Length: 227
Image (cartoon, rainbow, N blue to C red; front, side):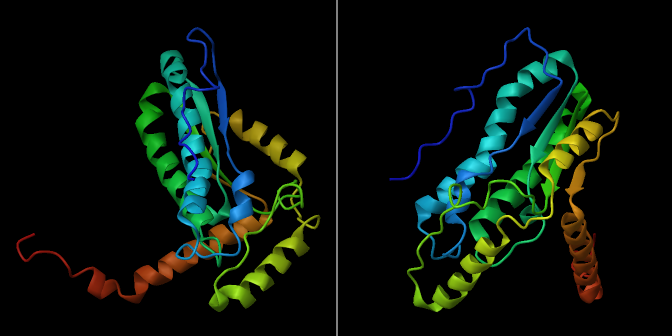
């Protein structure tokens, strides 16, 4: 059966008199076991739901529970851990990327909503870090049940398994970087975590500019005649 929706006020409810200078919101572990082996159209609906419940609604709910304290103290920093998959989709990453695109749109909008209360917001988009994410204990892969995807699914699983233990990112250095950014008066809205993440930022920026230019005249002539 589908997983139950998480409740923002269960398990985490800040004391009304406590101070909360920094909130780091991330839910990015268990759902990865569902991200490979099915596309967004062939994946079981509840697998997609579980993915989005965890990696999108998880950070939203944790932040919503903390916001009353942050608003009351008129200060604080909300750090949302996203992924480069929140900038660029990938093959067999449809549900995961959907959750990350969603959480980034939410976090970017939230930054505008809470800025008048002195609350800052930062989205962190890591590349590949040598953590436990791809270890056999943390990651399992959905069985491919549709023949059309079987060959590419097998190739994808092999590739992900081959990355385990070879990721270039150092989690300790990322933690130090986040501390440095958190101490800034004006932390960035987005932080590309890792050289590979910087590459994704640059590629995505160039691609969007090319797409804007490709049909600029057609795009720019869609207004009503009296507008």
